[in-house]
Image 1 (cartoon, one colour):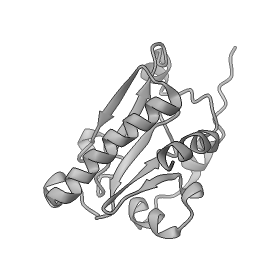
Image 2: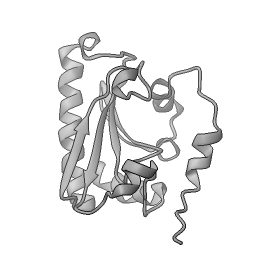
Image 3: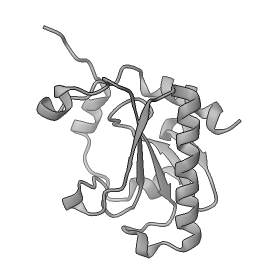
Length: 159
């Protein structure tokens, strides 16, 4: 029998839901590494997903608290896409993935975990990185500690 070890998941399982928006609070705390913020721009920022599907799972988030695209200005939308492009470029340099899943979940029915604050997911992919475990067992295998991944990515995002 193989044992999967993901100790950071217990924090997620046991934690209560914050009343305040995570995406609004974290950039104001001025602790980029602890909050996994890789890059900050004028209207948006890039943050690592604390509970990733795989190493390098990022999110591009507007500072403005909005649940859908129609509530964002063209300037914010443009920067959101520019940082998505930048994230893909940096992930290619750092992790050499073979592909990417990029997407937005708008509304609970679409799978949004934080439905009140729009964000774009960027998930690097490699051939053979997923198997029946994610589909049937709802288990993800993340081979590297998230802060080790952060330390690899931060200097690439901030040369």
